[in-house]
Image (cartoon, rainbow, N blue to C red; front, side):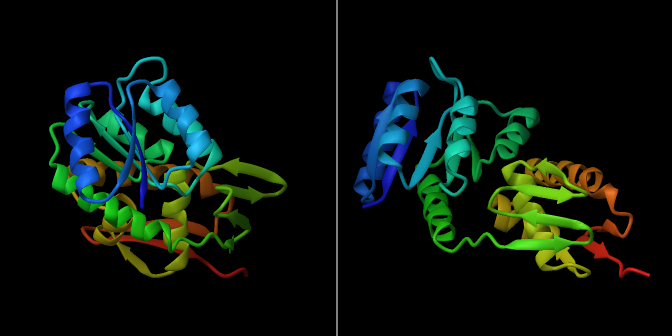
Length: 226
């Protein structure tokens, strides 16, 4: 049975979601505040995490950060009334697998949960050489000239995808659907922000460029040494 950690401080809404998840065969551990939810995470190691953001004692953002320090694989879905683009971007930067805005469809939530759980069983974390950089995708660490740069979870996953298709086009649709599990205005804006960050991080090696193919996607270009 899939073990779900669910943080939601609105008791009425939480009860509705819990009953629906239990009906679908999930085991749900519900908490009204972030501190108790974090203690539960450490104790039970759930298969998937669903977080509201505005919660007592420890908010959802801070809880997600603590979880990612311990586990970089468990799927985290934010389900929240915080809908500003800055909140969406922050959620993905922390390492969220998904971001849903209230009011949300419980059927859609369950569909997304199944999608992320399926992916979680297939993720591999190899090490890569990227020009003069060494990239450890499990530790989210990029190294060059004895200097190390720690990437956010989302930066690391995006770079890994670009590396796997180096010198070839990766479409925006493919990136958004695989890494964000959706393709809309907010996630499109978020992708552009992360691409910009990776360009800055990779500028120590002039042979590396992330090119934009207008209306299509991106190319991680790595030129040969001369």
